[in-house]
Image (cartoon, rainbow, N blue to C red; front, side):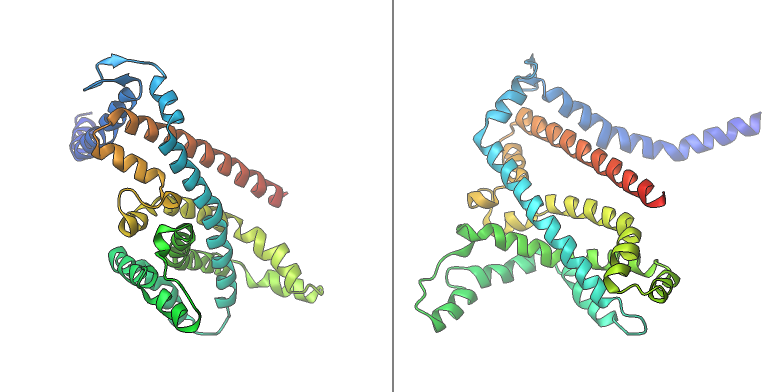
Length: 289
């Protein structure tokens, strides 16, 4: 018994830093944010119920940021998944060295964001490379692309370019895990490429595709870095994201609104992930049956 208690004490000592870190950097801030959601005033001295949530939903800046974020996810995530899958299928050639192509597609991930943004600013500035090229061929009035409606699609392109390589690697790993015997059996039975793709490749890639989908959504929320470096705290309204809204409220010390937005965002993401997991489990069971 003494040995058992000694082991428990030693284990508790080793686990103590993790527990302390969890309480200080996760549990305590989370509970404080939850408290701020239902209070107002300096230090959250007055309980107001759901008033903060009502004011948040009525806020024009919050609705603009939410609409832009949802629009960005609905456009960029399908584009990057389809592009990554197509490129992975093209690169998945047995017996061929594709390491150089993998390096080419993975390179944007290791380039610092600040360096990338500097280059993109040079290209899309009012006096940048793109306006110079267009002016040399046609009668073109230079425009500041990053302060027009095009800024949204420039941000989508930047997101796809920077994150596509990681998704390609994931899809290649999934493709390499598919047994070659299934394809050989399908060809013997007269199955063509389309049959092999929809009957073999797609079912086996569903777990990988689900993971890529979740990762792509998570990365789409990180696009704030690029948008912030491109246009600052208050960019053109087409690229004003939820992260801009939360960052500006943090700088203004509006902790109640910031906490309310973060809590509401957490609930939405949790529901979305729960639905996706249920959907993925249902598809997996249907495929097994």
